[in-house]
Length: 193
Image 1 (tube, rainbow, N blue to C red):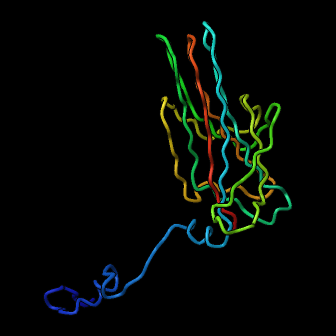
Image 2 (cartoon, rainbow, N blue to C red):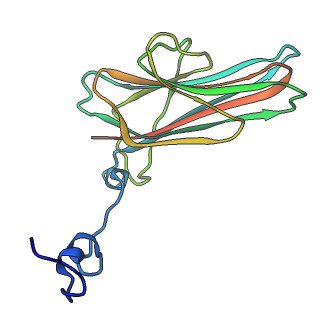
Image 3 (cartoon, rainbow, N blue to C red):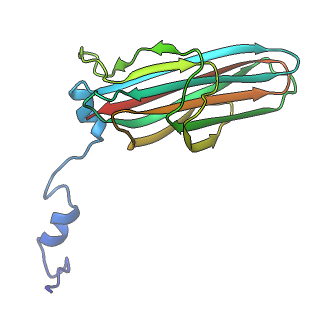
């Protein structure tokens, strides 16, 4: 094999072709860039809050991202985020977590509208979304993360794929042992291919 030592090879061709953007310029971007240009990058969120009594309690917000069986699309999750906000808490013990399920059912669901992140596009999402202020039932849990009373963001860049006929359920839960005002928020972004 030839020796491509930079000293012996003044043009440094083999090394330059591999890593030097000056000799062989190129660019790379996230898949969401192309999806946004095509009007196929979406976002949705849900939130709730409650004033908890002397015994405290739990506040849930759940969002279900469903890919209908005949959508003709695959949903690729870019990120999941949200926050837990606490106000007026007096010597209370806090716990929080985000749970992700494959499938599941929501209690008393409300419709959620997806926003197209290409603000010039009139394309609507193939997905259907609902939210609930209760924890989900059923489904298969595949990720659980502890949360603190602060914003969080989990980036997957397409690492979670939702095929036709499947759904992703994300629940953000915060609990206090004594009275306080507790708010929960969840948001999700995805593109469709």
